[in-house]
Length: 284
Ligand code: PEP
Ligand code: MN
Image 1 (tube, rainbow, N blue to C red):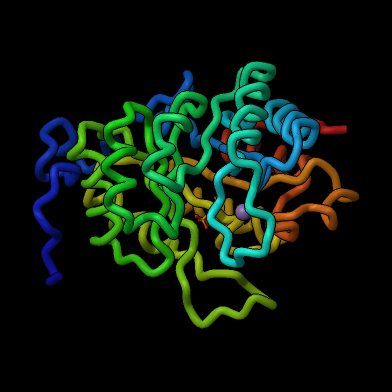
Image 2 (cartoon, rainbow, N blue to C red; image 1 turned 90 degrees about the horizontal axis):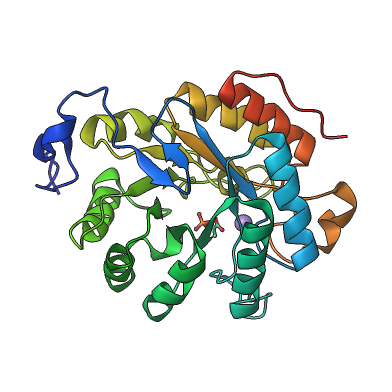
């Protein structure tokens, strides 16, 4: 592609309601508004590993002031011998925790054949970084009638990411929230998992009215870096954050998925307070 963006319906130039560069297409999910007055903090476990873990974390997220719950049940795993996540059982856990806490749920859908099933439980469908280029999945997600959280592919250009959003939009759904989660660079696992591209927020907001949030957890891979990167993301114009949380430090070493990157609930409360301009809630 050249310097010009392709002709897409999600661009401001083609979406007449949003010609004003300061305007944002608000996306409502279970009473929470992306692109509204306040940044949205979504938080939860990397993967749903049990009912108890998910409920404990969801309660902590709610108490800290987080507005939505995340948690993977159909997760793409790099190594076929790693924990492959709970699938249908995990979906049932999410449904139960959603009912118990009232928090809206976002979870990843990996397989186009499972979109309907996941959409029966989830308030928002997450398309993961590895799946951003999967047009059959984007098409099904567009048809499902639920808001979509579209992660940036880990080597995707801004144009490719916008084209992925266009697949969803051109199948009838413009309620899309974009999510920057770090791109591959010459990072080494020992200090950073990915390179968080905060530069992309401003040009993305200029190009499209779709809201954009940032995932500092997968960007860094290290929970101690998440607070600073959350602040940086908000300063750079993000409409929200997607953050992994552990329920308590003692369980970290037992987690089967991304054990190093979940923040403790107290840190989540501090981040929410910064995002919302309030005092942090005491978590003790
Ligand atoms: C996730 O958020 O659960 C996840 C797998 O992230 P990503 O697709 O960005 O790697
Ligand atoms: Mn994770």
